Length: 299
Image (cartoon, rainbow, N blue to C red; front, side, top):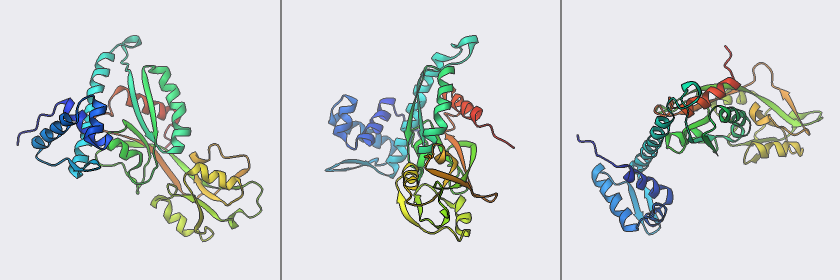
């Protein structure tokens, strides 16, 4: 079978249509006409032999095949950018060290973005001042940060990794740290386990569920919040207790108290994920190195 020859401008057209949700808006972002975008998409569909977008009065939406094509298009375009950046930076640093300039797109769940990434990015800026990191905070529900990487929207993701959320087969990654869960409750409360449970969707998955179900003192959540920050605010106001991982408790209010759950406490593994093609690149390797330096694995 002959492999279709798609030019970078065709890949950019696919990405723009998916991002903007229609041919007209895509044309505006690309600086061309709607008819040119429509013609280009039809040409790409003929080359691939599949329909990539469902057309309708409200715009264009990728089909299943279209979603896959757009994901690959993003990743190919990113590698073309990396080709230029790394070629220009080869041996250009002090002592002939490779350096790099340009964007580094990071996806991370909220507490990782707040507490795990900043010191690593500070160290990265010293060693590679030309790198321009952007951090996209995503909910660690469903595809989460790993999904952003797989879809080509991020170069590296900081994600929860475990039996319920393994590294997707098309990505590579590893665990950076294991964080314990603890009980957080209003400071000075005489019987915190009697309080209502405050929870949020991202908090518990199957890697804590077995432990969770075995604790007869934990009630069903009667108060739910949008994220861990809102949970802490509610607990601080005396509305209940919560069981939370260590990163979420990094800046717990002084009006709260943290109680260890004992040796059988559950833990959550946090790690990085990236694509096989981006894993050996200078910027991604450098960020992983800084993360590991701050959180060395013990064993």
